Amino acid sequence: VQLVESGGGMVQAGGSLRLSCKGNGLTFDRAAMGWFLRAPGKEREYVASISWTGTGSYYADSVKGRFTISRNNGLKMVYLHMNNLKPDDTGTYYCAAGSTDKDPRAYNYWGQGIQVTVSS
Image 1 (cartoon, rainbow, N blue to C red):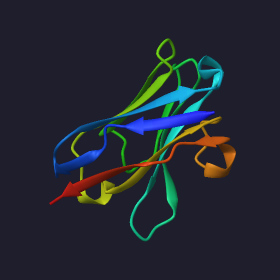
Image 2 (tube, helix red, strand yellow):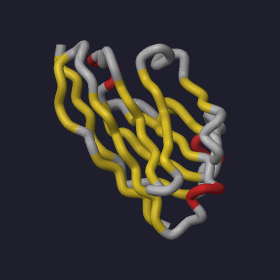
Image 3 (spheres, rainbow, N blue to C red):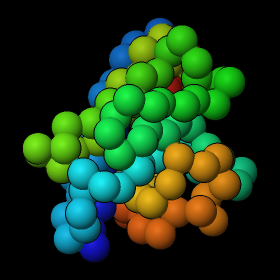
């Protein structure tokens, strides 16, 4: 199984980015997916997750109303649309497969991570 993130980079506060994750080697249309953030000096924390059908999406309180998770099972892709970005959103974002849980231990597979930097 391989999860490959793309779309990170640097943006000013208030800006937007879209992260993408390609899932290879798993039954993607039966896999719940999630996004996590490891901010500098902090533990990995939950950001958002989506059911394998795409009908259920869930968010950390800190990103509700600003981030949207979506997926395209035909393309084996999951996305994280990030709007109104804040400096606290800075860090490494990880795509994960296997659950919609907030606990990272519930996930079976992880991407290598991609950096997002939000400047004030």
